[in-house]
Length: 380
Image (cartoon, rainbow, N blue to C red; front, side, top):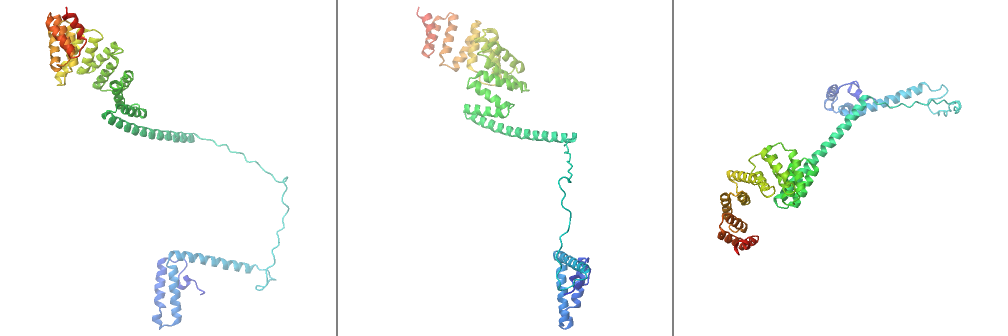
């Protein structure tokens, strides 16, 4: 077929989709075989119109067809151009083209004729903006790494602290100490883990210097007065055996922050009585601590009640001493120590027979230190 699809539909190559569709409808009606009694000429024209619309109506097919048309046009133009410049002596058909002759040129230039100019190497220079961008990138990278490490350390410290608390509640104190230490390795400022570890070191490991150091580190991070007083009370307990004078000052600091801390009153009273031999201050401290316990409806420790009775005894306040001893005896009738102390009190009051009976009872209850007092006082 000599006509292309655009010519069959009677539209230009730049026609829009709508124009192509309208042309197809018009020609399909015009050449439809039913209108011409089955004439084969119109049937062939109808098929040509249908084929043209099938190609040009689809955008992908139309693009491929346009490309083919362009190639065909170029080939026609090239053939026309070759025909125009064909030599006069050459026939159009049946005569082969003469072989191509090599192009004559001069010999290649020698190395002496060649001139090479070395290119100067450009030195890369950084501007202030480049340095700022690089510094900003490095700083951002460092901040990102630090943020990631801080987050991971925080998570690890929290997990180890929770495991330590569970081990502490299960009385697995060695495991708890290890978990709290691991939490502090990831987060040294974890005051709760440090305080828990200090309690284990003080109460179970008996590592008083390490406990004191941990309590002191927690105290430096504590702002609450009541919590600071409790920490000072614990620190005083750690100092009581090795440095009693320092322990007394630490207890005094704790009571200056919280005068209702009964434990600090009782601990300072015990220290003053048994180590520093300060009888009147010891009796006053023990009385204050026991009074706070009673006011708060807390159980009264018999040990401190006996210490107050001992302080009264040494101060020769025998009536007050006897009252405290009797309370302890009522709570612990099987204590040989309290029978011994009551025997000493009876000796001071001139009741020799009563003292011998109390010493004898103390020995029977297993307090063998009373045997010497019994031998000295009751077998003459």
